[in-house]
Image (tube, rainbow, N blue to C red):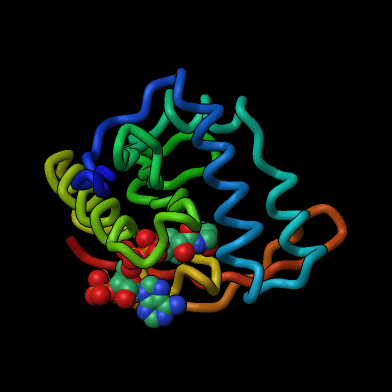
Amino acid sequence: MAGLSEPAVRRALPKDAERLLEVSLRAIRRSAADHYRPREIEAWAGRRSVAGHRWMIHNTAVLLAEVNGEVAGFAGVALQQVGHLQVGEVDQLFVDPDSGGRGIARLLLTSVASLARAAGLTALHTHASWRAVPAFERLGYERVEVEAVELSDVTLTRVLMRTRL
Ligand SMILES: CC(C)(COP(=O)(O)OP(=O)(O)OC[C@H]1O[C@@H](n2cnc3c(N)ncnc32)[C@H](O)[C@@H]1OP(=O)(O)O)[C@@H](O)C(=O)NCCC(=O)NCCS
């Protein structure tokens, strides 16, 4: 049987939006499930849509990692202020649970940092889920503060993190 190919990183295209939504929902419902209550998980998942992913692809730099031609994960960064996003905001990081623990997030965050550096940015920040905090820390981000965010009728906590490039 053929093995897994090396992950390849490329810019996401509008046609990828549906697949990115699927990956993000699987990541939230499976990988983050130990860190939030079921109502919080569903409130978080319920905010996502194909249209939202298309908006991100058009307005931010979204990178995806493919393994054997399948999307294994993706990450996005705002290279300029757009909508609710500030310059240097890493607002997406999702890895399919079936591809977790194999360095996909590391590859994506390293690629995001290279892209941002090439665009002249000197720092990045993110609002990390509790599940993602250790991964961001391994990539050099530091915790700034815990934030509370209102989603529908639940309040989720997350962590503002920053890194210098
Ligand atoms: C968080 C997430 C992106 C991690 O993806 P991943 O591909 O499994 O992560 P990686 O294998 O690339 O790990 C990156 C580094 O973080 C470390 N790491 C990851 N999870 C960890 C954990 N729970 N505890 C300690 N270290 C952890 C890894 O050991 C690795 O370090 P190393 O490269 O120095 O060995 C993934 O689990 C996910 O999509 N979670 C659900 C959605 C989510 O919370 N997204 C973030 C929104 S802000």
